[in-house]
Length: 158
Image (cartoon, rainbow, N blue to C red; front, side, top):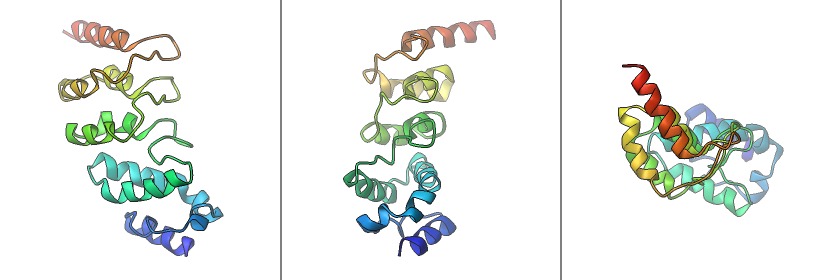
């Protein structure tokens, strides 16, 4: 069951076939081998605002102690990805579901990533994070550092 559902999900780029897998299927070698690819598909769908299938699969995995929205093999969370690629509405949805303090491989939270890539569109997303995080990255930079660095960069570009 797991093997055919996984193949169908990846071929058709839909999570519906795997959202109904049993606990045994979720712990199978076939599922483990395809997990990163399924996670990337789920993140792509979530970043496009297509969250229903993603949430169904996430619920199954949470019952098994795994969070589809947090990286295991990918070096960032779905929220890290969304702040750079998704609309404000999608980011708002994900804020309620994903860990706002998750760190990428550089020790940055999603807010730090957002601020380090600030543009006019991304500035609107900053409003969604106002009270989200006071964390530091691995270089002890806070979100205030990233705001300052972004502002300085904008001035230097003038």
